[in-house]
Length: 116
Length: 118
Image (tube, rainbow over all chains, first blue to last red; front, side, top):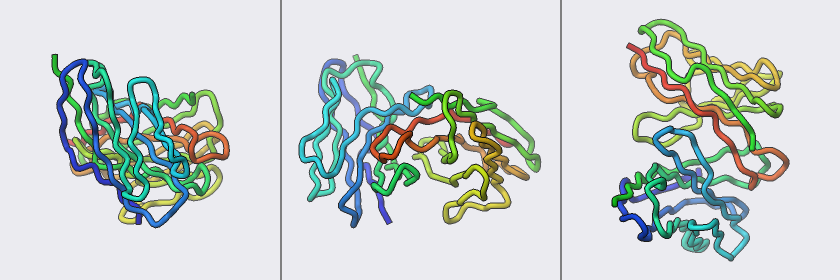
């Protein structure tokens, strides 16, 4: 069974600073996708960034980037120039590439606080 | 992106009663819908997958008779919590699979329904 682990229940970062959220996963598959979702206080799930496992290049989306280490099964999220609006729960998620009906497996989440 | 609505957004009920949660896809047709449960300060756990025109698929450990899932049409999936008890209090989220044929496509989520059982 696939598992996703986020070892940091809570993190704090000062506004304008950089923070890295950790995620590791366990799988025997070689073709899969990884995602980071954000859940703000409204509890609406929002996709932040995604990575295809067969691509070595790390994905970036504006202030968000990932460090994908396939051999180590690690998928960390870096948030640069942190903003107050980045405060939320962040979930790492994994999906096998077996079609769109394959399920997302979520990690336990990291609560990010952004301070002034 | 796909627009998904849920109704109600928050419901309080007495122990022993049943509660129905509706999930509607507003701008697309969904033959499948994922239902997740999220306890306070915890992650999303997949409960079941509804399928239009056939029975839902439940995850291991989820009681089929307690959580009735129906996919009545291509735009409506419902979750009914039968004989609700305080331990069923949770946040329930529906989510259609990604559009198209790629698992890489974005999966959208409904805004969730907070259920409180007294």
